[in-house]
Image 1 (spheres, rainbow, N blue to C red):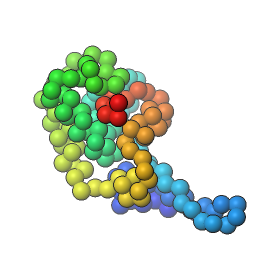
Image 2 (cartoon, helix red, strand yellow):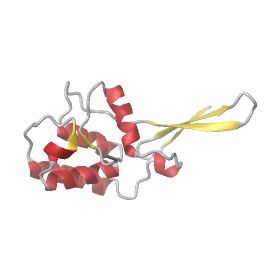
Image 3 (spheres, rainbow, N blue to C red):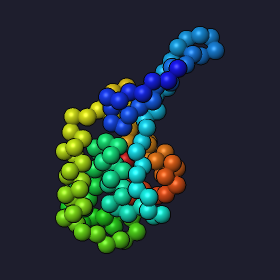
Length: 137
């Protein structure tokens, strides 16, 4: 049986199943929005993906990296593209404010995962590399 939890951002698919011996369990799958259609994701595209999917830690990390002019050293998959620094910072700030107070599925259901865990999943679904800060290094 499947349910969709629309109280989280992103929404979360809940699949209720049972082990072979009958004990019930629930599998949680965030339903990520991956809207940019560019063949190669730009820094702005990556920020939109993080913002639409409530990746608060990534947004904050990207903001700090860009404010401190550390994009060449700290952003994974950064391809030295030119960008309007103020516009990018405003976009990140918009999404930080937009997601304030919204729960992610991994927070609500205590999934013991963190945002970096889902980046490879998003890259696989989008079939493109996303720009991100690997703060677990």
